[in-house]
Length: 49
Length: 459
Image (cartoon, rainbow over all chains, first blue to last red; front, side, top):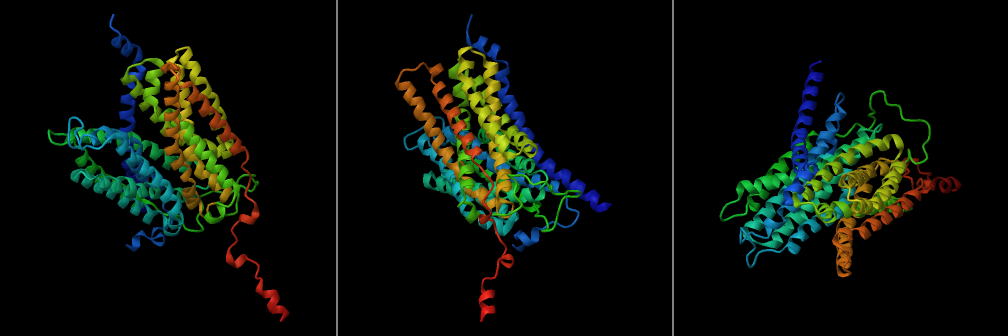
């Protein structure tokens, strides 16, 4: 029972260690790709009236 | 250092196989940094001048050799050390990979400090490149053995990490350079030092976490399918024997063509978007970032899908759907439909990523699990070739188009059709893949017919 508990904790910890930087990387990429979705306004800003 | 040996990394009863994917991810997330190396291009040309290039500073063509050398060494080391990896197991390999990759950064950092380009090339290009090759193939055969029921998903998880490594490496490098930049330094040297140290620790974590299954281990409740599948062998082929089969070279061509075609978009994503649709640079860069998410996600999604569809079918999808989608790209430019363009290219790139992650499972199906890591290592040379030659091909076509005064917005059309053609060729290679002839199968020494016996009996 205790072994099972400790292995579950280890498992969660191992996934957490890799999930944190990966999530940060995905977040940064989503942040970087935001101008793509606000493209019309970006184009409008680029073209003075 | 005996704890690094294969014998010391055999899993005890009760070990969860789900501990192995994070171990593999820890390594691949680090080595995937190579795809985000371009953030260092310009700062590396300003080591002396800091704010701008000064006389004596390195040039962009020089810097691009760091990336190319690392990728060449990736393929070569994976091919040369594949059998060593199989013999010594994933733990020792991951540890050596950590020393090479982390150490490579540190040597390169010293090279920047002393402004000696050869030292940077030795560190990042050669030693780091060897770390890349070892780290890339190290967890593959282990994952395939831990997940005989879902090999595509397992390798997809690890190789997704390589795509994810670029998502982390590029912004991480940029943030560090921003932090360390001063009036006398562009911050690259310090960034390399920090990155090398962090990558080393992270990869060692992977090395210490990984385990190999006991020889008689099977997942709980797993019953191997008794219905024979034409392209899934229960036999084994050694790495030396595999390269003598046409199947190996057909799969080599499959990987090479898939990578070359993907580079057609991925390598120049930002410029492509800007030139075809006249959007600002920020939008072009956003498009590149968006594609890299699909590159990573596709590695997991398509490889997992292949567990249900079969590898050959999923490669047909990559190639035929990919060719059709590439042919659509010029149309999206003609009708100026950016949303359709983004959708089409994202699908193409997801399948490009899928091609990388499905190949180890395809190799396992064709050649068995015995030396799949070593065979994968030899196949990786196809990637090195494509990664170096692909961009050259794209650049040549672009220059040719420019010389013939083709409008910039339409100058990518030929490239797109060419990429579609390469994918059709890839589909043909995939079509020709057949099961390996039994004469190539491995026979254990004790199962070989003893030729000496009849002669002895006759005497």
